[in-house]
Image (cartoon, rainbow, N blue to C red; front, side, top):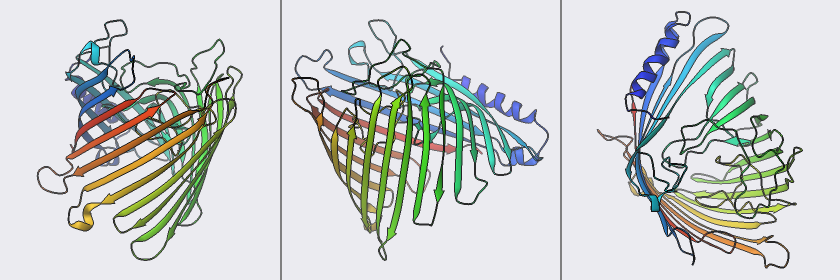
Length: 421
């Protein structure tokens, strides 16, 4: 499916027309908003191990994301509509450098990146009291299902999602997903489980599923303490229970200590061998503009951690390249953040971290699997003037492993967000 640049204007016009077809309501129009996000993305990934089939993946592209959100019609049940238009344009690529994930490529060799690709999505929404039902294109960011937005265009899902905030401090979610549109695709597809690295997941006759169910909630016990429980299940492949506890301890002016504890239990759903317990903990001490974080993650069971392929996940050691979610893997991380606002440079930030994992089950007679990764992230967002909200981010990563690819990676991302109304 190919799209021309004018599809975004057509999509926005159709969305507004759908909204105006609802019962007349000033709030429907007055509370609506439209935002255009532009993202320029360059990515270079060098494969450093001997015998690599491809020496590097290197591409450059321009992306546009048009988001429209209406208000709600009047009455006990308010109706509204959201719309999203996504367009990616190739600036530089070649068949021997594809595979970055920022462009859609042909399925047959030679795998050339397409000149442009896009997606248009509509979401109907109903609101009653403090509960909202959405039907159509969705982008959940929940422990059980997290859309991925780490490339040119975000991943989207199709389904139904009911969220409720009827009780103060309590948020509840219930939903069903039947299709996914990956970040470098314009096609809705059935879902499967990610099985990279040494997860050692074995599927039965059904390799994909058209039903992902999720349910759960988060409760804010006090301003400092929150906990959550979520269930996620990919029909016929796996089911999962996730628990999270977050505590923020104030330590005086400009100081705090945050604890983030996570546990997930994954098991098969009749069509796989999935069996995994994942424990993770992050502890962050903040002093002024400084942030010091230590993390630990421990996996056990017959397989690695399970989640929907292409999405993000709830592991504490999910970083730029790896998530350290292989079978029996133990990993730790040390991280440092700095906000330069204290030096009179608001909008400038730095993050650097190092992670190391070991004890991965590589199979009978083989030594344990090991991986390490180093990340550095420098970002700046213009705070005022005609270029306000213009952002620049440079991301660098290096990873070495005896269970996967040795990589050196750089990403340069320029972004700008413009409110249309």
